[in-house]
Image: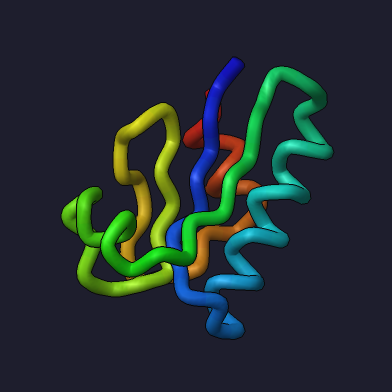
Length: 77
């Protein structure tokens, strides 16, 4: 199971990225776990200084922008 983490403090852009990630997962099907991380210290542990950010299986894929559902699906392979 792939793990998707959306890093953000709850700003509107962070919420859109989380929705886009969920849309991508819904379109692909099962096998994915999604987690929202809002704790700034946890976010910084990823080396992320600008949110929103998207992490897939522990690897930061997107920082400071909103990836579309199609872009996320491509990242998920």
